[in-house]
Image (cartoon, rainbow, N blue to C red; front, side, top):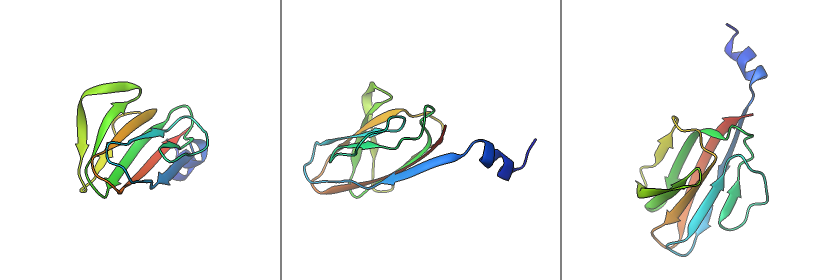
Length: 114
């Protein structure tokens, strides 16, 4: 088995951090981990390659709800408090987060690889 340095050379990690501030409660923020595009006020592109994100950390300034994962609307949304949320077990292609308060900043760090 090769070293960590060799593994990193063969399988480079891609990462990005987005920190949108949404002024109106109930606004959906869409995070696209595989797609590339131009960020808008509510849609963000990480361009992490075909595999998407395998590590995600979200830290909002007010409680938010994860309503959709990989195109599937969740029966019961995942509540993310200001303490944050980390996922290292799900291969993520996309996600929709809904704000529950005005003027919410959502810090979303994602890591993946091609």
